[in-house]
Image (tube, rainbow, N blue to C red; front, side, top):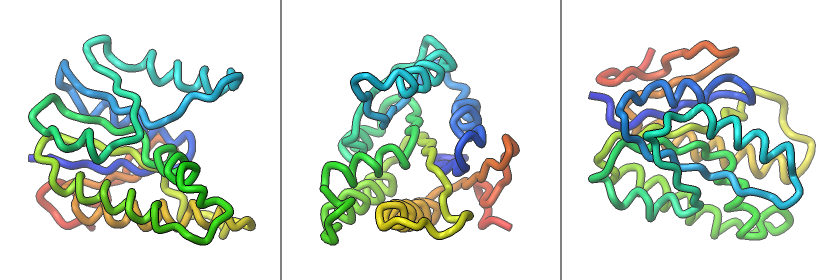
Length: 181
């Protein structure tokens, strides 16, 4: 049985919609990691599109404290969407964009990895795959890419199933019960 699934993909690859389709339970907790920004109508529209797509029976939780949320694994399946927006917020909160001290970021990522490892319920996690492009020209771009790439790799190690969405097509990197290709 698949317990933990990691769904990776680039921008507009269909990763979120695919992840949602993996959960057929009538009750699912959708964990939204995006922060809302006053006056950003485009961001509000993007969030609204995600909300409209979800079944009415699903519960939405907007939080950055994923590790704490994953402490309770007795409830319905969890879908976390997504780790790239979560990481942006962690980097923001730590002031890491311009500071070389990323200890707080490493701690938050470690806590998340530990929480996912300990979670015993059904979990689907969505994250951006940012390691297929060019090396970003800015320090902040490289910082984000490097931290997300390491986080994705750590989570992929412990997930039963790992999928990569490319142009809306899911590619199986690891199947439940298998070790991948």
